[in-house]
Length: 73
Image 1 (tube, rainbow, N blue to C red):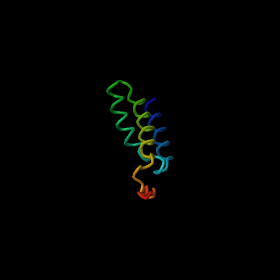
Image 2: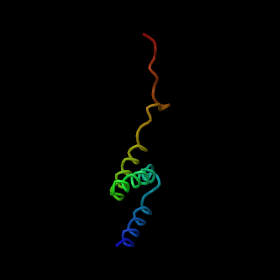
Image 3: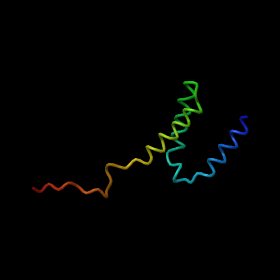
Image 4: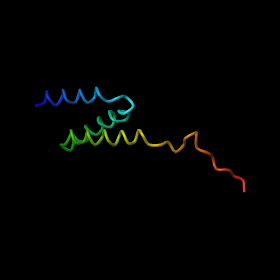
């Protein structure tokens, strides 16, 4: 069963473009370790991937394209 799961994971990872995987790998590693400590490594890795991807795609509040408020009245 494990070799089939490993092969399926490799196929999925190979089909994801780098832009879509941004944050996912880091989140999956952190989530997998935390989930392993709680006894749910695979669930933690999946949740970590989702959260890492979300965090990587957040808009930067200090974006240089944003207009600064004018101090004029």
